[in-house]
Length: 334
Image (cartoon, rainbow, N blue to C red; front, side, top):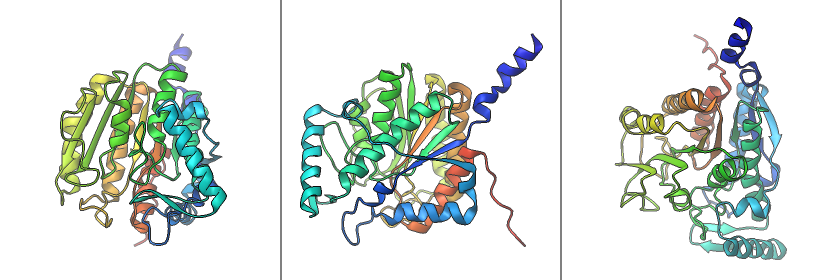
């Protein structure tokens, strides 16, 4: 009796599981042209950080599979998936880059990269639910949170986090999941897909006004949207999270947490004007992990979104991953 009680409290099967790290070389082949901020070097900077810090040794590296059409259909209209896939296949055959909007370009390697990015999110969801991983981080690109049910935009084609959240609900049978979006831009695509679905609670902050200039008018009841003015710093954002995110998440009691992990609210990132630093991303991750532990048996899947200053991105991902993998920061020499 006593032993069984101890086992229930300790839950060794999940406590001993590693943090899974999903990526794929194909994600480096998506190239939107010279000078584009959403570039392959973003993933290379993360990989360099993992090697230099030694953190990679504490992660379970996994190859991202390709998403299936049925996976994409969890979040996107069938016609959109078919038309975009055909267009991307034509670009791959031609070898020439073409635009889908002024900021978002398809290159020869974009289709496989987009399928691997969405597939990583789905595979990570299964691994965490099945107890094969304590939690997971998907170091993939293209990002996803601007992709709506029927439109590619904002560097995004398929909405990786929304697909994964719907997979957890519709395929794996969970009843409540939370989406946490701390990218500096409003996750308009995720909101478009998940608004009104009472099985989902989405919490986010975002700089406003800023692309895509949405999220402030009449959000659905399952959306906690917090617009933040430019030049806001970390302590003010922490207060927003404590007063607006955490109470909503506690009331909702999610059975799994999905994170749109954008690191472009960093003070060094040139695409926005917020003032977060690595310690803020560490703190945010700790607060979100606490929700996952209390209500979801620690189940959490995080997917890379934005972050365009390569050094700031790598440092911020390190802070995020150290919390996920329970690896302390190395001691600094005097």
